[in-house]
Amino acid sequence: MKANQIPEILQQRLLSLRAYNNENIMLYAAIFQGEKNLIKGIEDFFENENISYLHIHNANQGCFNCSVERV
Image (cartoon, rainbow, N blue to C red; front, top):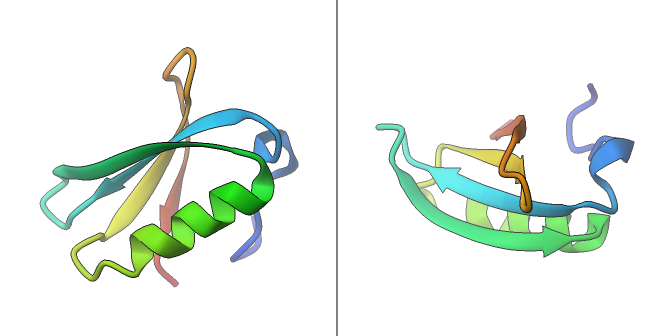
């Protein structure tokens, strides 16, 4: 996977974006649908310096999809 690229399989799904600090504590979570909305959510979450990484889950079933790391 390339940096700064949303996998095609996630581009239209209803997703839960979950933000964690360096102690693995979830600080924020929000629901997004569509690639542009997801990218905006990722950018907004990473504006907070306390956010170390993000997880993307399917919103309906809650299954884990992938991590988003700062690069």
